[in-house]
Length: 296
Ligand code: GLU
Image 1 (tube, rainbow, N blue to C red):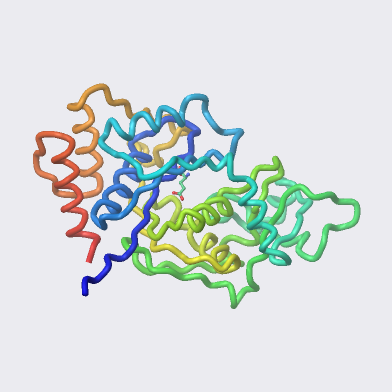
Image 2 (cartoon, protein in one colour):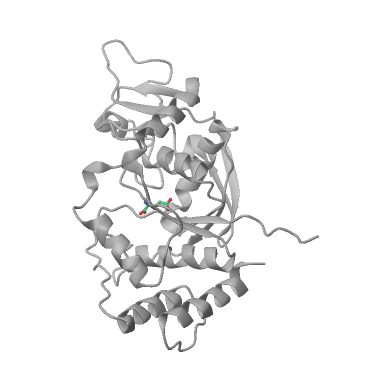
């Protein structure tokens, strides 16, 4: 009897707050290579849940660029802005694990509990047991376990074992923000589960978010995917490339430019792809190099 290959569903989930830069392209290339090396599916999801940060034309430009680099996704592109009902339903499933919070940013910063790895101030728990008199709801938060019960660990396929203590390192985190938009942490968990994603390959800037996502997966009773976080691309000053640090957009006007851009990504990912003559042979060589490194 023939053994069925294990199902593999990967994804690339750009935020259309700007065009792709070298850093976001590395995440796209790595996730695409992992899907190819596993003969799996590769989905594209537009993470436009934070509608205030969407840049006009950015999503279309990203969807135009990927095929010109030889990256074709499976199925329909999913848009977070059209799936708010799913986030609402997941929030309702959390029941008493979630609670309304009336604190503003300054009040939380004043508590001086420090900041979570993503820069958000750690919440002191003021509204954990109900909104104080006279306060109205601003955001919705999820309760994390008490210290001592709050460790979440997982094995990253590249970084190895990771452990985070949610009470100390993150605190009760936001599910729906004061501006009414659902938070990335909830949306990403709902979408990865609903799309059947088995493998998340993305930048190491999200390594610290993963334990919060695993915690939500457990509360919602959905599977935890495997994770592989690739190094982030930094500029000459050592800052992570982003719109804020003035990263330049990747543009491709010819097959030759596409090949050069892809080869740069492969070099960054430390993949030996020799000198390929064209884009299809690049992908074949890069997927083989990726498989040697990351696929048992
Ligand atoms: N939308 C996120 C970003 O562009 C990526 C989220 C993810 O891959 O989980 O940084």
